Length: 232
Image (cartoon, rainbow, N blue to C red; front, side, top):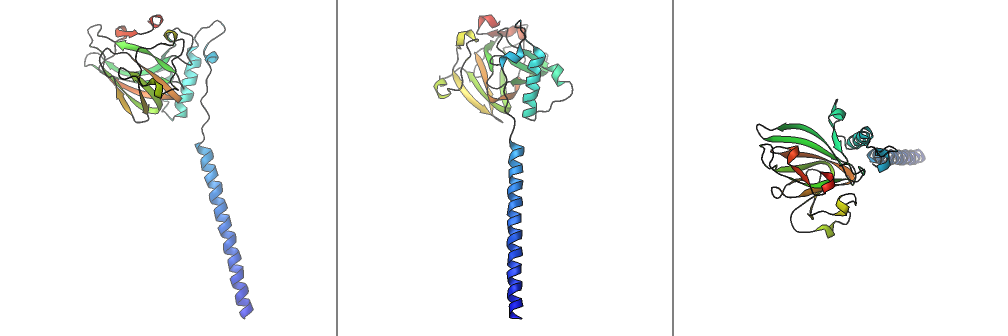
């Protein structure tokens, strides 16, 4: 009887140990599966994919890249979004490094308010520019909310460019020049605003690109002046 009792305890211990090992194994497998789900495909684009053999800007190819980035960030790609996207390479032929894409949701010139989303590809620069009063509209004042990714928002203020060696102005932008060098590193949920009316400002996306919601009083195309004369 005593032997049977001891065997029973031993057998129970083996079953418990086996179940514990299986449970731990299942936890490890599930954890590995979760890690796999979180790994995203790297966003990588080359300038060559945006131009044909004659150097013409292929806007639909650029939109393909933008949609890929938006899906990467789980931005709602609603029906008709692709058609609403406005984009430019500033006629510089270097869209991968210097360009702009946006969707203007509202620009009410009567009541003076606007809202649009800006899309920048990984490490892409939005060229330095200023806003002035034009066509009866006031000087544009604006602010930017980073929704996805990271943006280096640059404007007037103390020069702190040496703290951000990753922010490199491409040669295609005014031979690598800008007039403002105060950088604000804005991550998801961060908001920054234009420091001074009519002041030069520019942005550069982080390695995963950026989606920014811009709010302002009103946008007037003819009131925009870019620092690089070749971009006007």
